[in-house]
Amino acid sequence: MNALTILMPFLYFPEDKSEYIPAAISFTIFMIILFFVFRWVLKISRKQAAEAKKIEERVLKDKDINHMS
Image 1: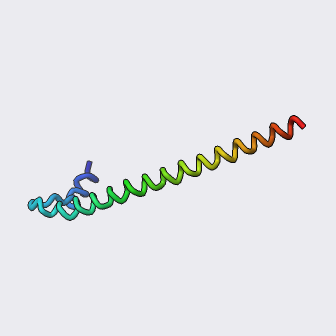
Image 2: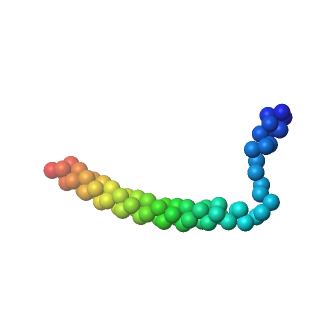
């Protein structure tokens, strides 16, 4: 419990709520960037999954043809 009371002076809650505005703006900007990066990663992942599926189908088809010979 003493450790919590020692850390209390480091907490800062401003009386003037306008000091939260820059933090809110930067948070919003980073969330927008995060959204677009996440969508970009998903797009790349889907492309790679489709390519892997094509390669897998080709390998299985080649394996079946070689197995029948």
